[in-house]
Every structure is written in structure tokens, then in C-alpha cells.
Image (cartoon, rainbow, N blue to C red; front, side, top):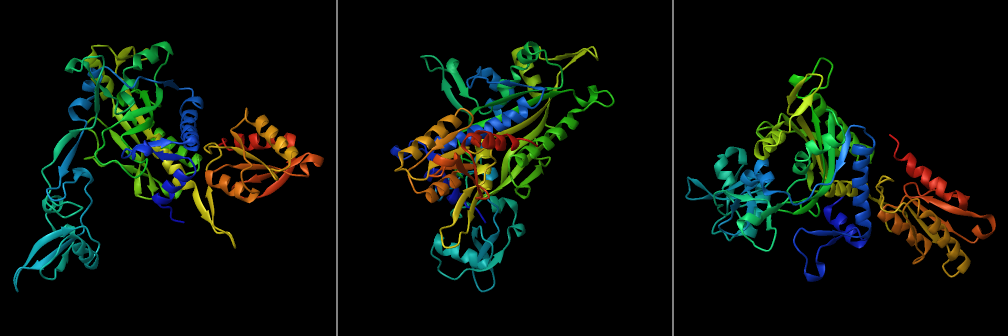
Length: 503
């Protein structure tokens, strides 16, 4: 089944996952609020990342650095001078675009200038001549019938880039636009009080390298992990929570020896880069992303930052196409060198075995918590045909990511003894895993509701429970039902949740 972004947005709104921010005021473009179930899903994604990166390893420490940093830190990192996007404006429709995100043009229409010569009069994105003709009719009136079709490859690059993807109008030359949000600290708004909302969490890790390595008595190689909010004044946000101006990152900075400092048999910085590429790809598979929906894309030489030895993107096939989930880069010693130069603080590492100081290299797996949440949502969503009934909507989330782990229902809500028994069971389960009680609909509708929000297990207390002490346990994915003793529900469900974490 092909999942559309509209279907995901509809599900998110309908089931309390994600809402438009400030909706009662008409909303604010590309800002979103996580609802009761969405906040649980996203929290579970972050916990799964933290579990894999920190708790399951012995070479990584955690950190929660401040959003506001000394402004000189952003000068050192290069963000103040170069953290910008090239923008172009359409002189016709007045829309603004990132130059590096302009869509590829595939068609050109030709209009007869006279009987012998054809002149280019309009450039449009089109797959074929018929498609182009439809767009012409939507764009402007023509005094005569256009004819002919050229592919973009037959045109000079400057001609293709010089037209608006919306109306075909002329674009202005590109201008730099800084992506950092600027604010002020203190009561006086002057240049001395300028600070920035951080555009990434990484710099908070770099400036704390010495603090963490000293207090935790760490030797290379080791990493520092952080989850936190970042802010970028994106020019073209959109596609739901995929690209927003306020977002949450899950970043690791892994410090290691430069290759030329390694002895025979030691992992070099490039070996660690390969290690983290494998680890991060495996993490998405572990939590349920289908292998065919993931790919690793190496950055071309012209995409690499000037200081990077290598970078690869983990990409997922979203409804909008293949797009980046996270990047894994070998940043060399650039960041620590920059901060050491600007702060005058010695950030070199003393290697006792080599008896020398050097600046460590850094491998950075940088993931987006919001994009990860969206990918897990898209990958888990199903619509299954049910004979004689509406299709069953299902979120087949990994148990560890599911917002609610177990739902408890009384078969008949007008039987006080069933209601009390079901409520007591739900209360008993709550300390162990997120459990809800519900009696607001017939049992079939309750099952459907929990299927659509990804709840792995449902427990029904029925009339027989009062005599045999057993309840019906239903599995989300298989819809199989089994009778088990009520006192065993916690062990059975808890055991299944624990087993799901094994790999």
C-alpha cells in the first residue's frame, strides 16, 4: 500500500498525535504541537536512541547543554559567517526559493516566431509535451499553438536555473540569507546583548569536551550524546514535521584518534566512521523500518564541507520521496580546533601511550527526532481489507515505540462488577507500562481505535472473568485472542515488551 502524506497528517490530527500549533489563531506556518499520543511516540523514539547510544554502550556519556550559548561560540563554529542559504525571488509571482532546492526542469515549449524559425518563449517543468501543454493553459493565454519539446539536458544550465518553478517567470540573482534566529539577553537590545537560538546541538558538546573528559575520566575513543531543541529560520519549511523551524536533534560526537596517531590494529577515524554507519543503519532496522525503505547515500565531493573527510546520509523513502533521516560525518578535528583558537582554551588530548598532545578527530551521527518519528509513522501505517467491513487502519509500530502498550476494556460497561474489575487491572498495570482504560464504545470499535494508534495489546474483562478469573488478551498485529489468568497479564505483556528489545 502506498502511504500518502495526507493520510499521515489526517491520522495524526484525528488520533491526537500532532496538531497545528496555535490552531485557534489560524496556526503558524510549519509549526506543530505533539498531542497526548504524539508526545509519547516521540519520547519513545528518543528513548530508543538514548538506549542504543548511551545505556547499551560503555564508551558514551550524556549531556544536556544550554540552548543559548556565548555568541563567540557561533563565530568560532562558522555559523555567523557562513550559515546561510542562497535565495532567489521570482519577479513575476514574487515567491521565494532556495536556489539549491529549485526543481529540475524537464521540458521546454517552443512557439513559432515565423514559418521557418522557432523561438523559446516559455520554460516549464514537464514530463512530456502533453503535460507541458496542460501547464501552459494554466499559466497564460497563447496567441498561437505552442509546439515542440526540448529536454532540460539540451539547454544551457543558466537558462534552466533562471526560471521560476511556479510560473516560469524570471528569477533574481541569488542572495545569502542567514538561518540563525537572533535575540537579545538583558533589558537593553544592543549589539553587545545579541545571542542566537542554537541551530544545532553539536557545538554545546564541543565546548564541553574538556569538562566531560576530565570529570568522567575518559580516554579516547569516547563519545558525548545529546538530545535537544534546535532552531533554523528555514526558507522553505514544509512536508508536515519533516522540515520545520523548531525541531529536535539526536546527536553524538564521537572523539577518536586521528589515523596517523593509531598503532597497528587500532581503529582509525575512518574505521570508526564505518562503524557508526553500520550502527545507525542497524538501529532503524531494529525498530521496525523496512530494509527496502532505507538506503545509504554518500555525499559527492562537491557536497562535503571543506573540513570533512566523508559524509553519508541515511535516507528513508517518505511519501515525498527519498529524503535524509540523519547524516554521519567524519568532521576531523575542525570543531575543536576552531573553539581552541577562538576561546584560547587548550582542548588538546594528552595521549599517555604516545606521550603527546593532539586534537581528536570527531565522528558525528546526527539524527532528527521529528524526522525519525515521521519515518516510523509512515512505515508502520497500514490499511488492511476486511470482508464486509471498513478497511482496518493499523499502526504496526515496534512495541518499544508504541505510545500505549496495553488497553483494558470491560465487555459490558453497564455491568459495574466488570467495570470495577477492568479498572483495577488497568491501575495494577500502570506502574509497569503505559496502560489505558476505555469503555466509550462497543468492543469492536475499541479494538479498531487501539489498532490505529498502535497499541500492541488489548485486554477484555467479560462475564466469564468473574467466575474463571481469566481475561481475553488480543494481539494488535495478528488479531489473535487467547484466554489467560488475570494475574498473569502483567507478566505476559511485560515479557513481550521486554523480548521486543532483544536483538
